[in-house]
Structures are given as structure tokens and as C-alpha cells.
Length: 128
Length: 505
Image (tube, rainbow over all chains, first blue to last red; front, top):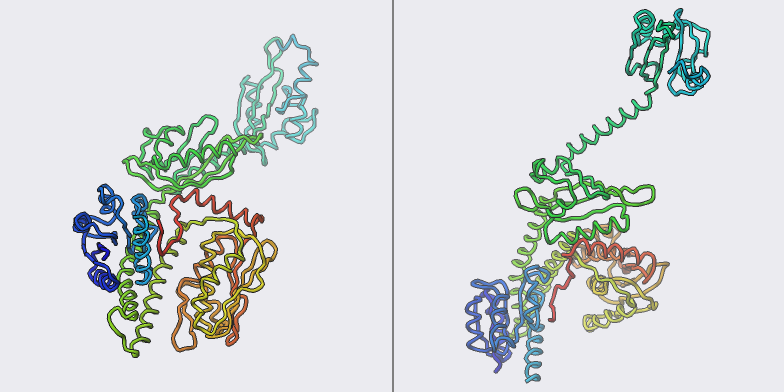
């Protein structure tokens, strides 16, 4: 089973994504702030990380940046999913750390989310 | 020396003077009046008494001056004597013979009417300028392009807190006080002004106040050229727009926070209901399917509204970026229709293209696609069965795209309301359908690209035809639009394109 780490601070959304991904056969792990997220990423080594941006402790962009400095983390598959305006200036640095996708949660229905996840994990398997 | 020069030479000299000269004897008889004097006084060149002259100069004690010259050998001078609409400087001098005896005198008129008028006019003009620069809340500058010295008015103090001694009247001083990030922008503009003799300029940048903080400033100025067309002077005003900019920033912050806060619960509502309907939480009773689908429709409407608000905020602030290119409108129409086929699959509607002229247009492809989607989407909302047909036709320098549907049509009274913000129309099913911001944004966006968006026709019970136009590639209109958009992009490096959904990195 492929491991997915969801890093998200909204409990309702956590429950929703956890249910969705578990139903579709993934081994789901949860972290609800940046610090916990980094710790779990480095210990679990998930196949994919769903990363929210605005979170307590430190935000998703800082997490991704720290992750990219790690030997394993530099190649980790990350989908940034946030509800921030795509054109928000704070997101300027996001592209530099190479997430696979930047998704706006409100504009990404569950099927689309599943589709993107499948696509990334499939591509990853092919590369390996 | 007078005695040595021949009298003919002196006479010729006196005749040619622009000053009026009237020479008289001890009996105050006029011996000679030069042409200038006869012009001023209207009196002949000789043979009359000074008393006729005295009558003309009532405001001046000319008679007294003459008497004093003759009896007291006194030279007198009256400045700025007004006679009718003229102003003169008047001298009265005694004339003596070789024995130094007074034999007569001369009245000399110096016409200073024009000089006085010009001087008064200049003073008035200067006063006006002083008043204006005091009254305005702007700082005024006058840049001498040849010497690079710059005059500043008191606005430097009132707006930016610089005392007189702190302001150096040089271009260099001014440039040094511009925010480092804006410095290049300003330098390029200054170069443009000098090189291309650019007639006027408008630029926004940050200027350092005396206390070290930066003020947002709008600089508007005009160029003055010499007779050869060389730029010599540039005069303008600096308006402090810090408050306006601050409000803009606050508004952006608000829109950003509000849209984020609205999106999170909407994600949950839309996502959870979608999952429920997909059976992710177990089987769903048939009785629940419709209400749940209605929840989805509503939440999707709200999600679209938030997306539109973000777009609109960006459009209104002039920060919407337009990436222009030349492309085949026919291809875009065909592609869009193809992508929407799944939507009409289970409905009694035929969505197709017809009469597509092959022509290249200039515009922002993504935005044109959005507008097409918006119009076809609206048709889909208001059409139960029949057809939605898209056609393309060239009309002069513009290319017109029409979306014709066989829907319920829109009443005349409602048509005018359509393009306002937040309009809702009655769909006839007892529940209003929102057109949201879509049409409003579409119209703004099309206009920006040089076209227009309108209702071609609509009849209740028959259908509607919406149309929009875009400039043909390479047409004069297309070039004008490109210039405008490029100019705005230069002035607004903060422009962003509109990707609401996802960005594949």
C-alpha cells in the first residue's frame, strides 16, 4: 500500500481527505502542523505528501524548503494544496522548491484530487 | 560737444529717436517735435504753444516742470505717468546756449506702456503660480534639462518634511531620494524623456521623506522644447498617494483573507457532499440524491463567486495581466466546444460550431477561452433543449463571435441589468439563477483587449444570441491595444495572470 502523508490543520478537511484516500486504498498518515509534518515526513518517508500552506508552527512552504535540504526529502513527491489565491505574493517562492502540483482545494473536487494523486504515484513508479 | 556736432546730425538723431522729444523756447513755443512726439501727442511738429500739450497731460504737473526748467534750470523726471491708456517716463530738461544761458527746454517722453503691461502680466502670472503651488497639496518641480538643476516648491516641506536647507536643487539629489527598487524605473523614464522628447510622463514610485520613511508618489509632468525640438525643461507635480496605496493594500489583504476563509468551509461542503453522492460513506437513498445534488450546485456557485471576486479585485486594481498573442479563433472555438461535449451528453441540446471563418485574432488566449466558456455556460443554464451554436465572422477590423441558443430568452428589462455585478435572473423555474460576476468580468476583459461584448438579440421563449468581438491580428486597433497593454504592464510589474484552479509545476 502506498503511504500518503496529509499535512493539514483544519480538522474537518483532515477527516474528509483521510476518508477519501483510505477508501481508495492508501495508507494515510496525518500531521496537523508544520513541525509534526516535517517529523513524520522524515520518519515515515511517505510516497506522497499533501501539504497545506497556512498552518501553525511553520507553514507549508517552510516545511517544503526544509524537506528539500534532506537527502530523502529532496526527491519527495509533494502536492501543495491550499486555499490561498494562486496569485498571492507570498507564494512566489513556491515554484522554486518544485512541488509536483499546486492545487486550490476549493477548486479541486475529490475525483480530481484522486486523479492527480494516481498520476504522480504512477509516474513515480515508472521512474523507479 | 554738442556745439561741435553739426546741427544737421543732431537734427537727424532727434528725428529718429523712439523717445518723443519736444523742444521749446522761453515763451514755451514748440520749436520742434519729433515724429515720436507727434505720434504720442497728436500735435504738429512745430508752431504751437506748450499749453496745448499741458492740456493732454492733466495727471502730470508738466507746466510746473517746464517753468522750473526755464526759471530754475531744474531737470525733472516723472516716472510712470499715465495718459489715456499709455504710460510714460517723462523728463523735462533746460537747454542752454554757449554762454550757459537757458534759451529753452526739452520734454522727453519715454513710452513704457508695453514694458509695464508685460511686467504687470508677468507679476500676475507669478502670483498665480505662487498661489497655485501653495494651494495645491502637491510638490511642484521644474527640471532644467540642460543644467540638471531642479526647482522645488514648498511642497517638499509640507509633503515630505524637508526644510529649505535640506533640499538640494539638483536632479542627483532627487534621484538619490527615490526608493532603490524604483530607481531603475525612474532612470529609464528620464532617459526616455531626453532621448525621445516624450511630451508627458506619468510614473508612480516611492520617495524618501525627511524622516526616512517612504511615501508613495504619483509624478506627472510635461516637457518643454526649444525651437529646434530639443528638450530643455520638464515641469511637473508630485502627488502623495500613500493613503490611496495603503487603502489598496488593505483591500487586497481583506480580499485575500476573506477568500481564503470562505474557501475552506466551502471545500468541506462541496467535497463531503460529492463523496457522499459517490458512495464513499455508504449507499445513499434515492430520496437523498436530489437534495444532495442541490447542495453541490449551491456550494459550486459560492466557490465560483469567490473565484470571480478574486479576479474582479485584480481587474479593478489594474493588476490583471494580459498575455497577447495571434491565434486562430476558429481553433479555439472548436476546442472549447469539444471540451464541453461531456456536459451536453445527457441533455437534449446540440452544442456545435457553424460558419467558422478562418481568421487570426490578437488577444489573450486563456481569457478568450474563459469568455467563451462563460457565454456557453450561460446558454447551458438557460436552455432546456434545442441547440447552442457558435459562429465566427469578420466585420472590418474586428472578428465577431456569436453564441446562439434556443433557451428561454431574456426579457428586455432584464437585458440591461445583465452586465452589472451580482445580477440574478429568473429562470422561470421559480428559482433565480445567478449569472454571478461572469458576464461583468467577461465584458471588462473583452473591452481591455479592444473588443466589445453585447446581447445581439434575445426573445422570451425563443432564445438568445450573445456576441463578442476581438481585433484582427496586425490591424491598427490590434496594434493600439498591444501598445496600451504593454505600457500598463511596464508601469505595473505586479500584474498577475488568472489561474484559479491548479498550476502544474
